[in-house]
Image (cartoon, one colour):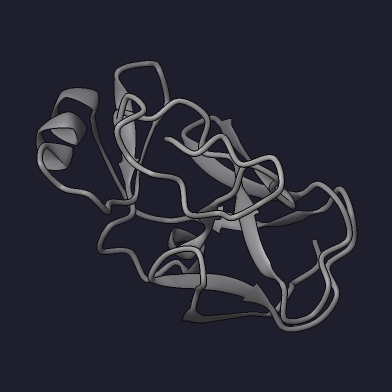
Length: 133
């Protein structure tokens, strides 16, 4: 597997983001999100009242909490026009590029359904922005 280089820095979308250091080819695995495997119930307890967290639920009663993880992929911000996607596979959260990503470009994915229930404003500023998460 290729090893790609990324840099975490200030994002115009939200807080810090993950940026490509060199070109990333289309349709390639970029890396995995690391963190603590917890129950879905614990994930929802931890998320209660918190605006910014890094938790992914698998749909089988478990979740991955990357809030305290060293993984740079915890900084992948949401975009309604993403250049990457998340794949949930056997208890892992993998990131793949949808298209070529240029150096300096922020790596983004569409978070899909969230527990914000449309109450959180989207900040992606894309032409196809849905305005809410």
